[in-house]
Length: 434
Image (cartoon, rainbow, N blue to C red):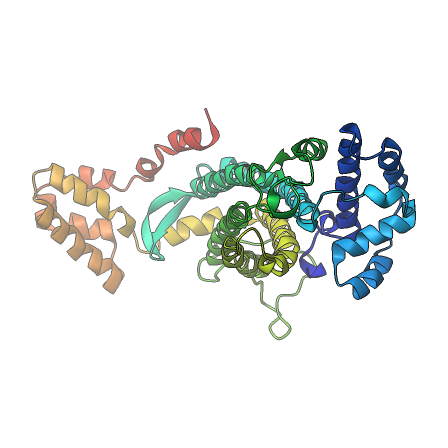
């Protein structure tokens, strides 16, 4: 986790103190359940809660682990130091380390998902606001980076909103996928612990019992979770790339807000660079970097191994922290994005009506000209615009083969911008509701 790209709330989920607090709650709730079942004395279960308000000594746990070479044992030893060896006699009764580690990881991922959902919601709100603000702001649509046909800036924002809304549903599903816990003991058979302990602990911690845990919670759940984060990161990059294109000097249809006192280059004082969206492209790469290792974690040996452990210690915090930061950075970019409608019109008219070629093509076919001949007539006039800077409409009006099929008024009508925006309300209703 790099502080430069971190937000405190998400970082806090992965702090050692948070992790040990969750470990403690799992152990304490398990003791309560064991006491209710008559497996351990009630007094011992109650004694565990003496550490309820204690801040665990991370340095002391690390010191013990340096000797034991086992993190969970180090924690349990420290807990016994706090509540007393005799009182701690029944802590971890019938449990195995993965019961604590896996259940804790899933709690952390659920909490992380909640913060990520808040970030997605902020992005959605920003996109919706800008979509309605520019619903009718006409700009040129591009395919292959080349002028295609007119669209609106509002539709661009609406498209990104719909994509991010799908991501929100994916993230809700991923949160539910990861919301399981396991207190099933060695190899997951409940041989030394009653399944009712697992049910009790999971209920207390807002989880569902894992149906079958082979000592570890199956890693297909985590693969799905991190894959979802990778998809969200790709959508962030999709939006960032569009903004980066719009900020090109020769395009300049929109640009990131440039604050007073901001500097764009150490060498060139004139520069206003799309640094935030370039940063988002890089952050998206970091998030996606976790997807393949998460997928590779699915295949573990037999009932368990720990090949997944080192991976998750890294990608759990790094990926959620990075994506959380990226979502809020994107929201800020969209909220403050400076948009230039005049430049959009100027760019669209750069090739003097060329973008209306399909309308003329269709009109010719409807007038009885074969599609092959219609395409030939339109293209030969379009090439004059590309190659000589001619005016497309003027060339069509001067072409006898075109005017033999279409009247000047019919040709003129094919250059009405409103034709291309007549269904914007229909699309908006599909995306945002009526």
